Amino acid sequence: MRSISLTAPAKINLYLEIIGLRPDGYHELVMVLQSIALADRLELHPNGKEETRLYCSNSQVPLDQTNIAYKAVQLITSEYPEIASNYGGIDIIIDKQIPVAAGLAGGSSNGAAVLVGLNLLWNLGLTQPEIETLAAQLGSDVPFCVAGGTAIATGRGEKLAPIPSGDDLWLVLAKYQSLSVSTPWAYQQYRQEYSHTYLQDLQGETTRKDVVHSGPLVKAITHKQHQQIGQLLHNDLEKVVLPAYPLVGHLRDTLEKTGGLGTMMSGSGPSVFTLCESQKEAETILDKVRESIPDSDLQLWITKLANRGINIDYD
Ligand code: C5P
Image (cartoon, rainbow, N blue to C red; front, side, top):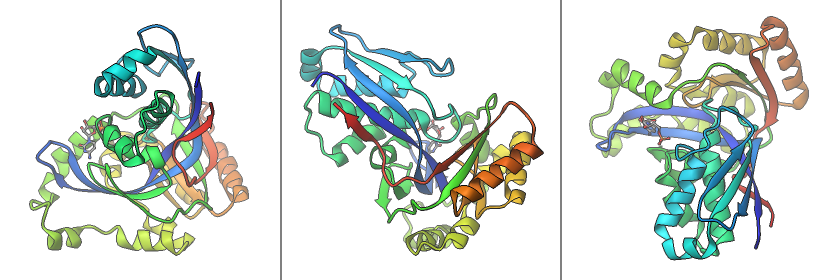
């Protein structure tokens, strides 16, 4: 096999609840994660050298070891050094469509794509759970990005329970191009302001049941109750990100007032989305938001929920 091409979808958070602080310093979360059709394309080409080289025309994407795609090659190489040395270096070409540092797991999805791609290119024979275990070493959202669809994610975000996909909804996605939010900053800020609400006994089933409120949303998704899905969207990180980024708060308010099933910030932001019943409804909302906020820095997309994660396009 000479080269491989993959599609790496973005994700949104339909639900993000922060439960407490874990002994490893990460936050214990309950999330409902959802793939969307907005996706990057990655090509992996063996380069006959011993190095990993990254190419991307978007200047916001780092092309060094800080890129999760690069880290994914390093991880596989350290786990399987003999196989890696047999095959040699890889050129990774990223066609970046997912906005960077937007709360949409763009980097995580690229990392997941490299794991899935190298598994095939280097004949590693890893199963999906084995890939997800490696993925967890790269970042909390990377395991979800492997299979995608719709899933409840707990722990750091790496423990996944897939649920039947709500892939028949559309969404308007909005982000100010020049704004980005640091995920570590958002969690640290939340910890400073809300650690008094944290559950102390993370293992205690009863207390956990008392604070976690994702059940009704999960039920609405599995029953395809679209109005309820829209009403039950939740993201604890809005409490710290929106006050610090008033433009994002205003954007969220504008989207919410314009229509659709429900509006929420995704992940640590600053992207905001509105779920819609149809493409037509999404187009109407997009036009109205564009009219209300005539700022050339505001990027708007219409896309759909998606029922899959990394897709191998051809080899
Ligand atoms: O896992 P990942 O590297 O994507 O996380 C980025 C940062 O977000 C972490 O370094 C941590 O500060 C914060 N985080 C957290 N709890 C999680 C996930 C992320 O505190 N469950």
